[in-house]
Length: 132
Image 1 (cartoon, helix red, strand yellow):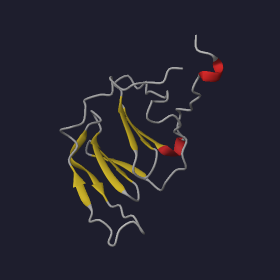
Image 2: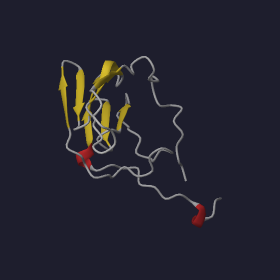
Image 3: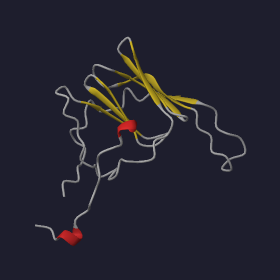
Image 4: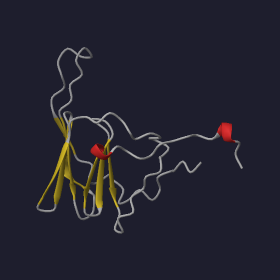
């Protein structure tokens, strides 16, 4: 057993205003650019911290999510993400960036579309978890 002083203390549960649930799909807005997408057929979503994000109760950025004809669209000031409501998988061309970094470059980058549908794993079964 690991000594208490060596254990990582985490808080994996997000604030209610950060979470959007549509059927068996849950989207959690962590930052304007970091969205957690989960699909769980039995509705038992994972609230333990991952090794990537130990704390999820961030300040809530302006965001909204809608469901239309089986597609969930989540929008923050910096991205728009669309996923299939039934499977939780991103749609082709599903991430639209509208990010600018004032003071970091002479001109803001042009909005971009990223196709992550073909590179996204079907589930997060191989995600490492902090179970301490």
